[in-house]
Length: 328
Image (tube, rainbow, N blue to C red; front, side, top):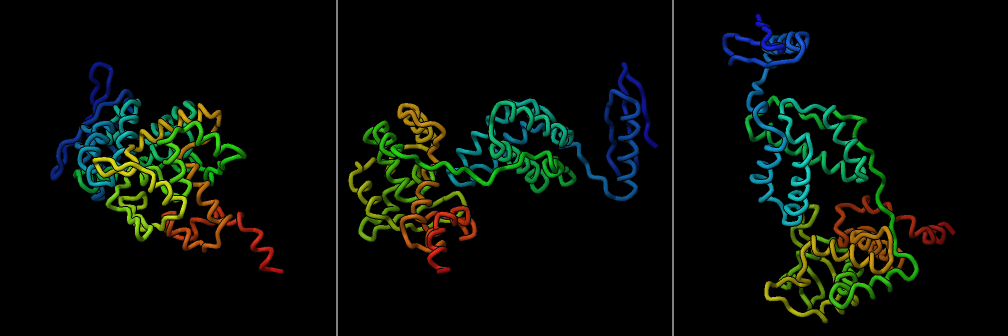
């Protein structure tokens, strides 16, 4: 039977049972202490109890830091940068100070409201939650916290709803204005993105050893979906590569992902173009393959890196004229 005592206005519940380590927790209300004690004793009676003492000692912030130190180094370079930056951001929020065992979906709901109030997108919040969920999964599988529940899974409808994806295309004259504002070096990056459908991380990580000028192909490694792929180089892509200087480190463009993002922001501002990101260039490039070529969805997926042709269905409307011709 649990012992409930009052100490300096707080209620402490203690449980001592043969075969189990002693358990104790302090609450502001007696009713909460009694409810916790009944829950733990019931779990012990049914064999469902799991020791959460380790999870009580580790805060979410400490879990995020440990995940960064132990798991992140084994991921692709692009993931190391993106996930590392996300963890640094999450460490600044109040939920980082809550222990893993005490973090509840209500705390995450507060975090979601805080992030949305800052003006970030639903997809950004979704990625924040995914990172938190990865920490809980790793804690369960590798950090001896098998009984630790994952509060992200309990959010249900509180999770932000993500739209079907950005549809930003280059408007009339925007490509010309963008290239003019970009200058000689970055305009080549923009041209290459439009010619290859490559992601920002794939462009930043491209090295000359993975470019075959004779065969007009490039090998993209450590891509977002975890698989390498070979991509044919169009005449426009070859023209970019043929005019580039060779960097000592072997990098084709000599820029990191973060540098590309920062330069793109500056260029769009100078060009007077609103709402355009570097990733939108990939959407534009894929759209052009549907509009200007007769490549099949499977062939375009091989170039773009989408795992299945089904993932390209959002672009299907661009070939509606083909459907009209087909039905006669």
